[in-house]
Length: 119
Image (cartoon, rainbow, N blue to C red; front, side, top):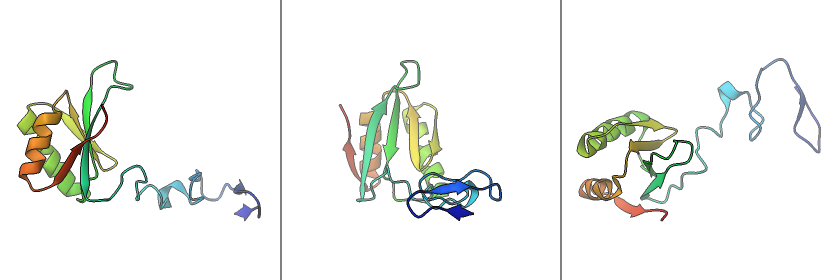
């Protein structure tokens, strides 16, 4: 793999796709494990998003200090509490529908510091 002093990767067929942020092969990418969009300050943020969902909104829960397996268990509990569907992707829990108040109450009852982010 050749690198120019002033720029990133010039050419490589040895590793396949290369991550543009860390210049490692995508399979061994180190920046995807550390999600820079999610602040790790101990506060869980609940936001609502409709972008790319044809107008139907979802609640996004970010900043939860748990591993992937524990996130799935927590997401299952929250989906049951709200009575709706959802998923876990990239360390962010997505719950379908407008359930910010219910999620705030449920996470506060579990002992987390929670804030509603956005408008």
